[in-house]
Length: 363
Image (cartoon, rainbow, N blue to C red; front, side, top):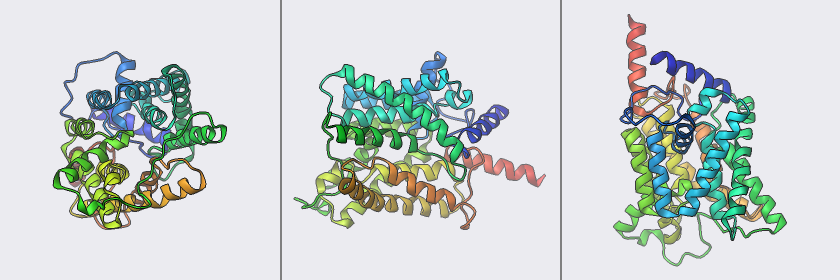
């Protein structure tokens, strides 16, 4: 129970300097009764879930269903990357608690998603081989980053380092083509402010699906459901962040198609979600931080993706999220009401643990 969660949190800190993703394995969850799985399958599914900070195989299964709905080939590569990263971590003897929590698999899953979209493989065999190599590489990068980063979690930095390096190599080698990915258009055909209510609702869901490089509202709904099953508060933060990102796009004068495709929503959704996972929900300060960080992530996406497009001709992936989330994390204790959770899990569990600790110290 509590001792197991504490041990895992300590192991996660040893791996990542500070807790990376959700480190409390035994915190209360609506998915506590999910049937037991073979260890490796459980770890791989948790890797899918950890992309959105859900330490749950059931959440991972729902995410997999969302990927299958949108694009079976992308789902296959995401699974390949996650499995490869998890297997590499096990073979290398990396921290067993972190492996069990899916903390090595999530970057590999994202590598598979990125390769499916940005690398123009004609056949699945070379795509899967490249993804397996990329997934394994992401596990090694994750381990190395854990020895370097001490002030903030490593977020999705291992994914970004692996995917962007591969895309740069592909660009310079002229092997496959790289699909364009940007959060703004040079000459908008229709402004986001002209979107209908239905399009706005859809854009909030595609903002969630674009976390996995998928442009599909139904897929986004399934991914959001995976977070709801783990934590309603975390899901609300995710949807809020995506909606605020879309709103920032409208204020920026973005093209309606970019906003509808979720290109303005995925980094804000991740950042707002991260705030909900790592901070204790005390008063309005965490809510203000979640909202402000979502808007900041939208602006950072435009600036950073533009710089990458001009200088490197590759997408910036989730680097804007990593940058803004790190800034938010460092605000803990520096502003009133911003308190980091001792063992990050979910807004509900973080608040329960904080109150329990306060009651224990008062005795």
